[in-house]
Length: 65
Image (cartoon, rainbow, N blue to C red):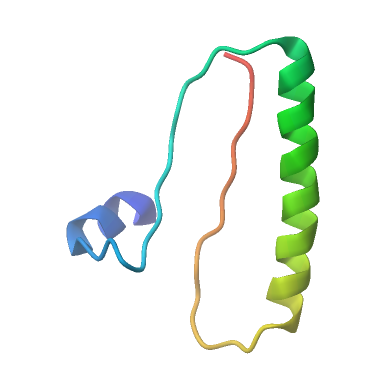
């Protein structure tokens, strides 16, 4: 619900929304999953060390349809 509400604010310089449905090989699926896991680890380090100035939502879904 909060993601939908953020569209109403139309503050595209601060908000980022991305969704896509793709077709890809199983090998590439595993590569992407590995990259995402690594990036999430890096992001968690940044979050852990960051000052608490504002609350943000961070969501990633990557699954087979």
